[in-house]
Each structure stands twice: as structure tokens, then as C-alpha cells.
Amino acid sequence: GAGVSQSPSNKVTEKGKDVELRCDPISGHTALYWYRQRLGQGLEFLIYFQGNSAPDKSGLPSDRFSAERTGESVSTLTIQRTQQEDSAVYLCASSSIAGVSYEQYFGPGTRLTVT
Amino acid sequence: TQLLEQSPQFLSIQEGENLTVYCNSSSVFSSLQWYRQEPGEGPVLLVTVVTGGEVKKLKRLTFQFGDARKDSSLHITAAQPGDTGLYLCAGEAGNEKLTFGTGTRLTIIP
Image (cartoon, rainbow over all chains, first blue to last red; front, side, top):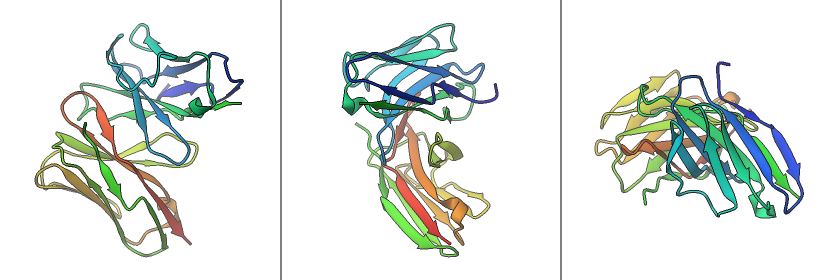
């Protein structure tokens, strides 16, 4: 694939259930980022991967949020015991450290609605 | 904590008018990027500026990086409805991570 892909595109879940969001970065991009975007707002940083390690998890809002990356490719963001405040679009981006100034390429996002 | 404040937060103008969006910080950045996001999509990179005082043009869009590399501006000439979207600036401070601005939501009225 040419770009960053995310799945599912939309997810509706009941409060208290766990959800798993997937990101497939651009092939060869070693850096991967997760952001949260609430309706009408800007981007809130969640976590950053360089390869399979996560040097910066500072944006994860609570211990209900976790993320992993395997094989320097796919990443999953897991939200346990979802709350209504978790409703947002979750965006993934990838970047090549060989590129210019860590320019990020974004996927279309996963719209999560917690009812 | 590095913060990037964008102004205005919202802007609605008539087609054909000119506009400027500002991105300001008290921090110095190694580079600064501008993205545009349309509804239902992820942000798309428009430009990266690296050198203090640098000016880059992309058709009707002109981007400038401040001399001290703490601020940037985006000027659009003869705005068109296709320019509608959320404009985000993002600064990189050498830590492999971008700090995104608060965003400017631009609406061009036909």
C-alpha cells in the first residue's frame, strides 16, 4: 500500500468494553505515532514508536490505554473498559528518519464512539 | 512544555479574499510543518520550513518561518472553496516528535 492505513474506519462500542485499533504504516517507516482528535479540536499526542520500542508514552491518558508495535510495522492501540470520554478520532502517522525533519504521513483515522 | 498557539482559531471569508494564519511559540524549533485536514481525513503535509526567515510558496499559499524559528505564518492569496479545512502547524525540536498547534478552521464561502 502506498499510504498509512487504519482499521476499522468506524467503531461503535458500549461503555466498559475493550477496543483494539490497528495501524499499518508506510513500508520502511521506522517511526509511528498515535494521536487523538476530539470533535472540532486539534491533535493530542498519545504515544510514539521508534522501531518496536516506545521512547515516549507520555500522552497516554490513563492505564486503560496501551499500544504495541511488532515487526517494525503494524501497531495496535488498545483501550480497555472504554468510557464515553474516549469517543474521538484516533489518528496514526508514520515517518522516516531518513526523511526531512520527521515529516509525518497520516492515515484516515478510526472514529470511535462509546455509547 | 512546548506550545504552539495558532490564530485565528476560526476564519470565514469570501472566495477571492486574502488571509493570513499565524503560528506562535516561545520555544525554538528545528523545523516547522504545516498540514491541512479535511473532514473525515487525516492531516496532509503541505510544507516544511527549516531555516530562520525561510519563505516557501505553494501555488497561492506562502509560508514563512520566523527569523528566530519560534513562529510561522501561512498566507493564502485569492482564497478558493477548496482551501476550506483545518490548518495545523507543527514544530519539531530535535526529539523526533512533533508538537502540533491548536489549529485554525478556515471556511471559504463561494
